[in-house]
Image (cartoon, one colour):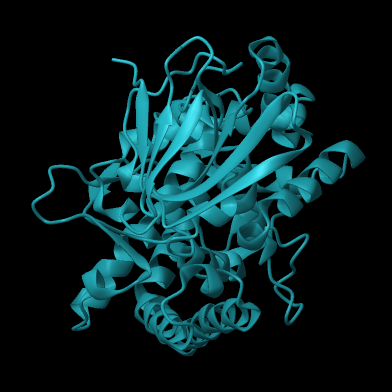
Length: 401
């Protein structure tokens, strides 16, 4: 049922006349910052040029932000443009209650931000969104004849992403060929119109973590922080590599599937290792945790497993990238694991408790902020040195015996 009156209970509200059309027509902008969980379903999308399609990969990231997963807590309103609504009128009941009148569902309703509204409505019962706010701009006095052009202009904001152009240029073809037979292939989006839990930028970022061509193990202080900090920069490097014909990234093709497996193994094992050493992973801010009574678990797509806890990506990437130490160039010019992937798993088992401990220590120094951990260059270097030291010591012990 379509709403005829939308009740808003904002924390802050402002009424601003239009700078051009403030007389004839008299257009007014009503700005509200509203607790996300107080919104309701049923607002018409009549004036909106685009229907919500929240299966697109880009909206998976918006959803993560709304649910406070792998991000600075309660910053949704700072990263989202909000919702624009066309209405007949706005009535102030008191400082904390406004009634937005929407009598004609063909003219009144969402002009822009339908995807944002749809995601919020789907998460209304989630405890994680209780601290989130969303900006709502309600416009009144807009002539009906202007709506189509205004809605169309607002909805050009979603531009074709670089990732889509790279896919069109065939830059991801060798990755697709390598992964096509895997059960998780369908969960990877290659362009902005694809659905998927991961996208091509994620795969490129994970490859960047192990790229010894760009980040040699012998170069102190040079670590692939951009793999987490700015995936667009990692994608730029991948594109430049493809266009130049250097194919430095393609040398990682023999390791690709195992890099993805290692990603999931570390992400799931982190809690196990910490708990085994007497800790309580469920109390860590850098963990995403499902309630024990919940029927659902976090899926680990690259290993096919599930668990109640998973490490957040900001804390995960420096650990994963530390195993770049185990990558070397083979006789055929491609990259390989020194000693094979079994040696990598053995090294994770050996050095894992140390990496977990150092990550938790860094987390405490940074207030449990996973995002800050992922951007800490000293942390990336510390973990890389830890893997290198443990591996060198193990090799010396093996030679001595």
